[in-house]
Figure (cartoon, rainbow, N blue to C red):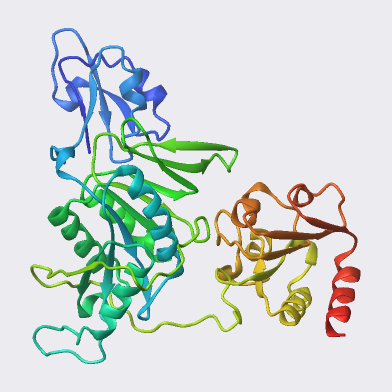
Length: 420
């Protein structure tokens, strides 16, 4: 981006100075700047504090200030793009559940759009590889690709490389950007996971398209056939539906547990396409070690039962009650943002808008008031059980079962009965 002051138009009136929220503009004598003018004695000067917000452009009565992009967006022929892609996320060689969920929704959208549904799989699944090519034997990756076909994909594009074994921003961005340029999909869906959030925006910026993050609903407009991308805004107080009308592909990330996967059908036929990257994939960073959170006994996002604690626990030591109840139920341990912000429990346990989105069969909200930001992460649970001493707590508005009482009386009683 670049911002310019037209030396012939600027009168030095100072209205732009008043409008700038960052103090990035000053008015100086033209004698000092060397920009002489037959009528105007002063001129606006913009310094490096400018963020290109455009407030000064709107404030200038003489249209003397302009903002221009230094990068030209390439012209896009929308007719060249076709097909719906789901990025199949894998960790340690295992396809993540959110990928199957997106294939389930993608199957519905592809039928409405009248196009093929494809999955894109990156990784390095073999135990050994050649010194020059860095390619695996292919057996494992084909098995993973067949799983994607069984869950709804018509095609699976596979790109194997040592640099893609573990997620790294740069090689993943390079690989997906290349494949988009090469095959031109119309729609790309990705999980709003740590991996998806890390590089989906990079890809969108690289290929000059838009990205709608954390979608909770997707549909196809019946007349224009454009993807309708719906997501919560303003603290989940309103829902916005966003369209990418003039650029391709249309990109969206979706949280885990928002959609349901199709039943696995091993009889489905599909095509596996092996893609070669034209060059070397590399990264300026190196993965040295992965450290697992030993406090997690049951995976939060995959759990059938979750027991979550909040500010009502009073102090971190009281999370032992939550863990004890979870142990009796074979459940995962969750938490509200208030508990995480207070350093009572690691962030990996946080449920809510800024944490994990979960959809278990049973969700226990203990000592949690039920702010809308927490609700958006767990309200799709089949059954919600709330325990809170405040009868007016917002969590009771969405709970299937509510217990108004002191959690330090109720939870030990539950544990006692479960032990019987």
